[in-house]
Image (cartoon, rainbow, N blue to C red):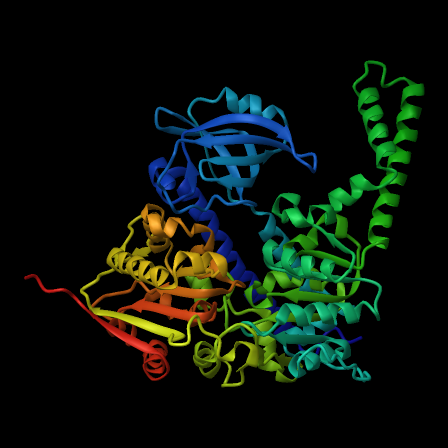
Length: 637
């Protein structure tokens, strides 16, 4: 095997990724140090990165034998929060405004419920330490584990020689064209033609294939079918994605199809529905686990005894350790022998239980949200790769603007799709949106190739309804404000108008109809500060509280993968300079405008937004195919 046709090119490409990743790492670490040292506790509370003061409640072992402590804060009106399940946190105490970290206790959040949090800590001793702390608090912690795994993967890939990883690197870096096998086409009459083509291409690919799934086109359905058919030809595959939520979603669909799935990763970050599929649960459920547990207990007792150095005890220790190793190897082998799909995040593929494990095929879902460096981690374990996603929707999260501007958010999938269009299959029939809602996105992002399935093409809330509307606030003199702490933006008047329009919509449809037909409504804004204010207004509104189970309010990122009958979008920006900042990211706006099944409502200052060609075209499209309402400020009498 040739290691490379152009080793300099390969190394430069990977060295560039290392440089950009280093910039992101340094930026995120500096932010954490700023938060921990210079930023006041009060500011960290307001930006949702800290709870203070806190009270330590009860403690217990959870279902996967991890020690959990309960943490309470005083009732808070702060809506923004970065303290979410799966995030790492540390504890501190406040002694006369001097912050001191407590005993290097690093925990992982397993639950956040308004003013209550459950945190998994390393040992029972943590509770005693925290109970004795003076004015304790909890804040986000900078966990370097992911970065270490990504840097290691980039180094491993750059240095690969005379192996399959070196061949895949050459293809991905653009020096060798990917190949397909000759494969007899299999028919799938329950799929549409583009989905069928995608599965056929997956089965025939030797190196790399891409399933390009725009909003509502059944990407998950297609991917599950491709995995199912691949398993008719291979013993086992690995399925991965950038986020735990994406991994859980595809894993649940595979289990519904009757496929044996092993979920590898931190159980705290796994959905409840998949707990029984985790490695830890499978391990504990093994018939030999009881003997293993007894042996481990016996070993601890001997090692803690005073006469542990006596020859007879040393011999006993040696035999117990050997038996423990035998059982551990057997349990691990049995678990993987019964598994058809190993499911984990991209970073999770570096988990110790996957060391020296090798697979023929890797499926990467939501690949357009995955950092290039993260993809290299599982690629080193496989022969071929199938990417699935949409590079016209949400990009990876990159916090360092310099790294972003130099291309850190351009994903491996996007680069491959541009370089090798022959490996891409576009799914072109969508099953979510009314055709009027779909068409603008199709024309702007997908060259007009999308079409609405007849089952959804003409679907509306009422026969007289416009599927897409824009309430133009240019004459309302609404103005955005910027939060000095978070740099997020808010437009209170626009939020209040949205609530008023929302009330009118509910009254028109009636609460009874919404409940009986389970009509769901999503409210989206690109800005967290605006989302926080809208949530506050909804909580105060008696009519909207009566249907709170039917309402979801979140940022664009929070709505990725979701769909609602009605979507209302608050654009926020309103200024004389035509500056739209964050709204320049059109991929995020593509996500926002394609969440609605039957009705899309946009609120925004068209004069500000129309400085950008995308929003100007969208405004014109809605004028021709929907309804524009130009609002006027009421004059004083």
